[in-house]
Amino acid sequence: MKTCAIVGINWGDEGKGRMVDLLTEDYDVVIRYQGGGNAGHTVVNDYGKFALHLLPSGVFHPGVVNILGNGVALDAENLWIEIESLREKGVAISPENLKISDRASLLLPWHRELDALEEARLADKQYGSTKQGIAPFYSDKYQKKTVLAGELNDPEELREHLRELLEWKNLILTGVYGAKPYTMEELTAWVENYGGKIRPFLCDTGAYLRSAADAGKRLLFEAQLGALRDLDYGIYPYTTSSNAIAAYAPVGSGLPSARLDAVVGVVKAYSTCVGEGPFVCELFGEEASRLREAGGEYGAKTGRPRRVGPIDLVATRYGVQVQGATALALTKLDVLSYLQEIPVCVQYELDGVRTDSFPFPTTLKRAKPVLETLEGWNWEDLPEAARRYVEYIEARVGCPIRYVSVGPERDAIILR
Ligand code: GDP
Image (tube, rainbow, N blue to C red):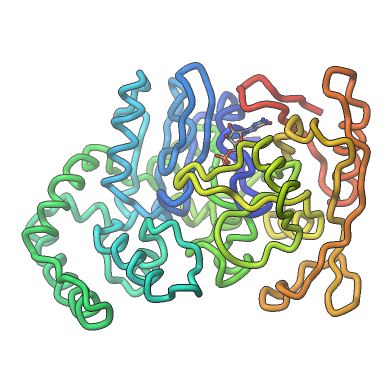
């Protein structure tokens, strides 16, 4: 498998970081192709426990080149904080092993501020943004109202460009939200400071990837969030503002001609969801607390308790389809060991009719889960029932489960 994408099949937080960390051993280059610092991959390895927000999970492997592609929301400030915190723990990060696309657009300080202002305006109708500026950033990118990272190499031109953006953005900040305008001094100080720090990492990552592919290097594309958060195919508007699906990997990485040999979809053995929006299989009360505690389901970026539920096979089958998954990794199976009986959502009931298909986003809130229960297991004994659980999911979802993760550590994995 020369090219492989690792993607989320559900709502995100499926354990992609842990799978990339594991699979990176077989790859030469790891590429993040979308999203920003609004979610976090948790990786546990010899260096310790890390929540990676922007950096590709390959940074822990010596010799692996990591790329932030043109599709990411390049938050120079938070990226720099992340680089520094990893360096403190002994992880080497240099322009040799981290390359940032000069075509990535910069997330500017006002994007975070606008995110918070808009969520406050929405009050009880909030989308549940992590307030990292992702939606305002991508809006501006598509309006062509932000700057490319490569512009940092031409300070004079950049200053002129920033001045134009400032004039426009201040109209929105003051006129729409009644907020304080930015000054040119504030903006240029931020850009010079954080832009200056990441400048040494910038390069034409498209050219790098083309020559890496020509030289037969193995490329691993890493997504953030999951299929149900994809801007086009997810539960709009409770999606993220970029395309998290594998099909976007070639575009967002800088190698638009790439063809994926494999797509590994990561599925958690139960469901979790962060933020607002319909979540058909949601559990509440004591049952939810026990599952949340057992799985440590708190946001990597925000610490927010995640909504939890049984595995949702309707959503999972849909996720497998839109991702074009060729194999699955089922994670956190060990977490379910406390249950005597395991609920599984096998169908939805929508307006009195049972369905296997994932409904149109706006009708989802009327859908009710149809549950079955499978036998639980005792992990100390040979978990025959655990095996049956895996086989059952595989059959219902229609994609081979190649990896079963039974712990956060690198080697807590069963290959099938
Ligand atoms: P990501 O954004 O998809 O990488 O997901 P998260 O950062 O939320 O990662 C999932 C969490 O579960 C992390 O804390 C991992 O260390 C942990 N984890 C991953 N796989 C397993 C597993 O098989 N068992 C257990 N108990 N924890 C796991």
